[in-house]
Image (cartoon, rainbow, N blue to C red; front, side, top):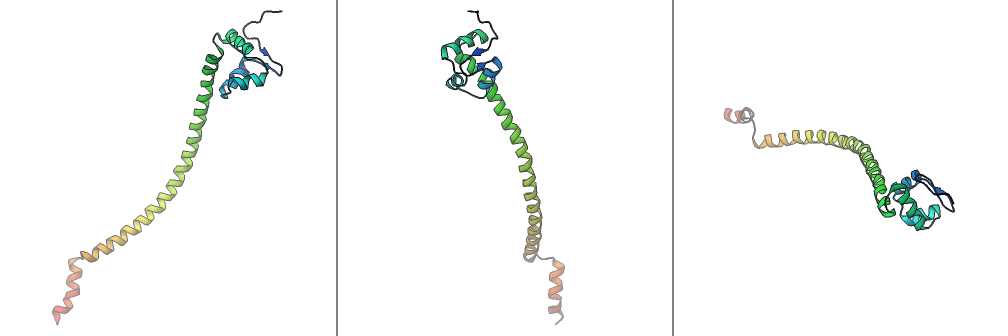
Amino acid sequence: MARRKKGDPLQGKRRELTREMFEELAALQCEIPEILGYVDVEEKKLASWCRRNYGHELEETLFMLRQDGLIEIRRASFDQLRKSATLIQQQLNRFLSGREEADGEARKLAARIFAIGDPDPKDVAGLFADENEE
């Protein structure tokens, strides 16, 4: 039997597992049972292959490689938020521009109403000028 070396793929009953495929499965947040089922090998065989290729235990290797997937998920989330933020900002600007116009009309109306309570002295003098003439 030939001695296996670092970098050799793991031969399973269903398919072979390369380093790239293992890292991709880990990034996809696959658990050990899922990887075992995907390749169809025993956990001992996968653990041995991991030690040979990565120099760490299976759980430790999988934990480290899964972090890449979590970072990719975070990147995708931020990209989606940036795209959504632009759309939300556009909608907000449309809403606020309509509000500013309505607010402007409301301010004009309020100014007229308050002007009634505090009229211009010239206007008041004009109103009472007719009474003084009588």
